[in-house]
Length: 115
Image (tube, rainbow, N blue to C red; front, side, top):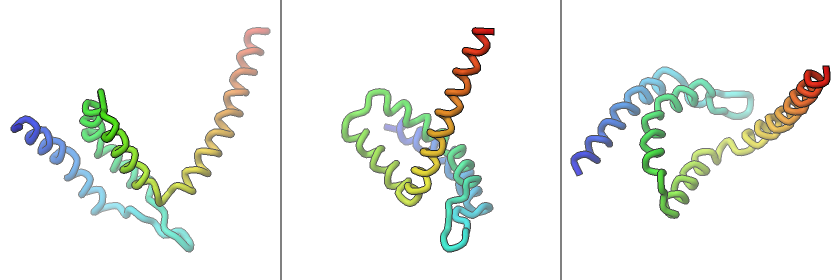
């Protein structure tokens, strides 16, 4: 039990101070016209701060139970709820141009093979 408590304290000490410092120096939301958007830089730095949490989750998810998998999915979707429309557009654009790039790479490979 002490080992779990120490691991939790270690993760908290690794994650919380840099995250609090990031949130105190950089705004989370930026005003853009009629609405507010999530600051990409702040989100990136917070993701970097959360690396110890990701490592702990990876060990925990080595053989996850069904309820744990659903809980993680629920938390992830709840966190992304506010930016779903933007992510749909971004992922669609990424898909279209990624597919176009893949076609160009294939054509380039065929030209190199034939030349």
